[in-house]
Amino acid sequence: MQAYDPLDYENLARSVVQALLSGPQVQLPPSETFEGAGVYAIYYHGDFTGYSRFVKADSPPPIYVGKAVPAGARKGGRRPSGGRELYQRLKQHAKNVEQVKNLELNHFTCRYLVVVPVWITLAERFLVEHYKPVWNVVVDGFGNHDPGAGRRAMKRPRWDILHPGRPWAAKLTAEESFEQVLQRLQDFLKQED
Image 1 (cartoon, rainbow, N blue to C red):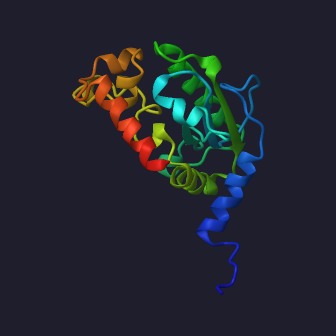
Image 2: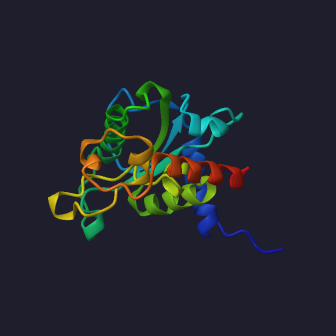
């Protein structure tokens, strides 16, 4: 038997995830602003055909998980505490849902956890590995931003093919059809059963 190491990757990540999941599910976006960066899980409770398999589960998994890091983190900078990165990211996701034609914002809830920045990426990675949320793994692109005029040659994300409506995504070339993306989703969900 191997000795328990509280600083092992799995144990550290599991503790952050447990803290996230012990929090309440609230509407997306949260009704009150808050400060900090961290991780979150988004849950879907609607009637979109492709998601019925996991929506009807006793304990539905998140449809998407993500992180919001402090400003400047990608370039090694550090913003003083007091930013609202996590709240702003959840608001941005709510805006994305509102723009599409076949989803309704009132069908979404979320959990979020303000985390010391050094643990944010670790927690997000563990959440993706553990839950394999469909919007992270097979119908990717939900968290994407407008790529800008210089990168319009990029292909349209699968998320935007399945859920059309974001104006910037409509300008990108779709390399798959709605039916193909839906089939990929169904195949993935069958594998996960």
